[in-house]
Image 1 (tube, rainbow, N blue to C red):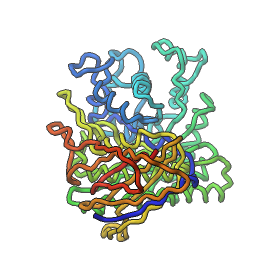
Image 2: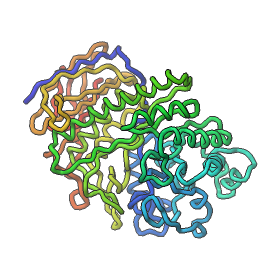
Image 3: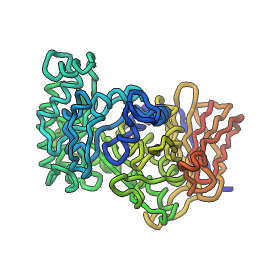
Image 4: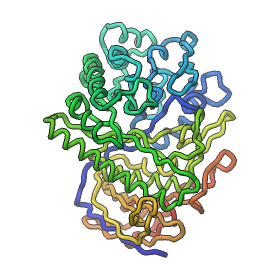
Length: 480
């Protein structure tokens, strides 16, 4: 058994925890929407007005504060007006983003109903690919206006007298990429396009918050966005997938969240330096609104994969990083919630499987308010050959909420338990409620045939300054 230490200063508050870091993302691709979120009211699979019931309940259980929709790449060619009105009259259209047919059964009204049932806030990404600023402004009017104008009346005629009050809007998706419908050649072009969209959208509702397209690997793009559109936007969107394989060394996979955290810090610093250089007064933070691991089997058209305990460890490490960064990155969205690179697997026979990544989210979702306080970990370490750096086996984050201190401890070690000596300043706990996700191997997975191989396990015991962590485990320890 290895030995480690964690020092927590309950009086050293970094910033308030942003619950927005536990967001989710659903897109019209594969079987995420059709077959996952939506099966239709006539389906034999149990549903509520067409919304798949087992998926709905599973998503509710992880308490996402917001859900991003409709894309993703899909957003760059989605024309929202085709997805409202009586379903039997909606057109079936070609989706150039994914080369698929879009039935338009699930549109704005269905999305709003679903996120409300889940208990989340909506986050809509407008079509800034082959769409227009006018189309985007009409969408804002449809969702948010109380007036007697055309699109506000349309919403009321469809049975929704009250505005949807969608406050968070994305302008485009990954417009830096040539895979994107209507991509931009550079950040300067994207900034100008963003200004045109936001100018129209805020005329429909001046109170909306805007997420613009940033790039995780191109500082020049981000500087151009701040320079050209900085006074119009509130967040810069950053996406990061770790493209991996089942042959990748486990220790290298779980080292990647360190690089992700450092990169996000660096991007934020670039944004702030650009604000200073170009005298942008508006505050701009980051929205980490697509992130996950991506295995080779996740190919079109379904993009499905079965993730394992090792991926749950990766997930816990990213969530720890997002807690530490929540003052500068208040929004993050896991990509994606159902069937596509999924937290939740749902098949056409009515079966469901909750991945170890899902279980990690469930551990963290219990606490969504509080103060992130300083937590410093010391532990044995190893060298990641892929990242060419030393990586500690233990990662720690801490949130003080009311009369409880919540520790989030991740043991990267593939084989050894970790005996963690916990030193707390400014707080005197006597009871530890300890829950964890570990399985028996880093390769353990939950499947349709074996949906409960990996579970959340737990124990409660008098706290005497020591917590033992299983190998390859994500742990939530509540001290009270």
